[in-house]
Length: 299
Ligand SMILES: NC(=O)c1ccc[n+]([C@@H]2O[C@H](COP(=O)([O-])OP(=O)(O)OC[C@H]3O[C@@H](n4cnc5c(N)ncnc54)[C@H](O)[C@@H]3O)[C@@H](O)[C@H]2O)c1
Image (tube, rainbow, N blue to C red):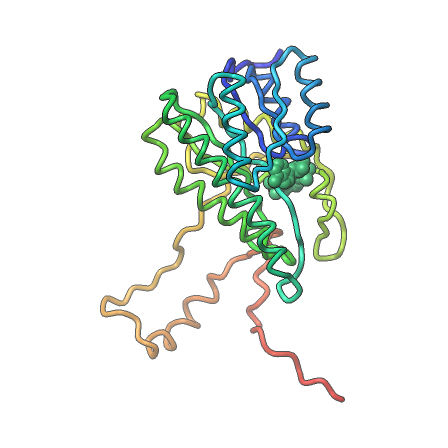
């Protein structure tokens, strides 16, 4: 039997027709939340709504495009009109335009930043305004990715996911006074989106059931997580990982400030040894040997 931690609390998931968002919907509904299934793919969203109602839950389909302010505001209003309030928002919708920096276009960047960053901003602003007005608090879960640590070929996506992590930290500060908690997940799941992924050797990643991110979302939205805000978790597959916020590491102190000569004297002896792994796969730091222009080509 499911644990109904969210009984009667209306919940919205954006981009929920398939993949990871579909799993969030199934788990939120099983926990007792009336759900709004938002997606520009209305057919798949309607099929999921049928599954939820067949299992005894309440579901509303929204085909609002959250990549516009009107769409985001319309989505939040549709939830309030159908279920009387909005208590939970999961910003999950996403798109990809993977290109290396040298090949990408303005349109690639705009498309990804609009859906992920502006879509998350517009939905959260509208939902948080409604939650503050309702006075019952609320829970928001954003969707970031390990891709924001750096991911070859993903300038737009890593920028978007980094922005979402940073907005999560800021909104946790700003919305606590209204009893609204804001966290994020970096999920894992084999989905339409993940199928485009290739590792450095050109191989696809391991297979993961995309619905297994849902239980963590339910927990984060429940009162049992009332002490959790401004945090990011890696979810999905076998893991539940705390994604540690960037913070200052090794720090050299010179009370009168660092002039160039002092930096030249101390930098190479104190800093490079501290450089840790980076990138989505956390490979060893690759640049200790230096990064230099290619050798001139012979004509
Ligand atoms: N799959 C993974 O392993 C993985 C890893 C890290 C992060 N993520 C993130 O998880 C989230 C879900 O991804 P997924 O893998 O399930 O991909 P997916 O492509 O299956 O799902 C994304 C959904 O968002 C919808 N969508 C796109 N633009 C929209 C818009 N403007 N308005 C409304 N809906 C819109 C799409 O129709 C689609 O159904 C994304 O934010 C993604 O970046 C996924």
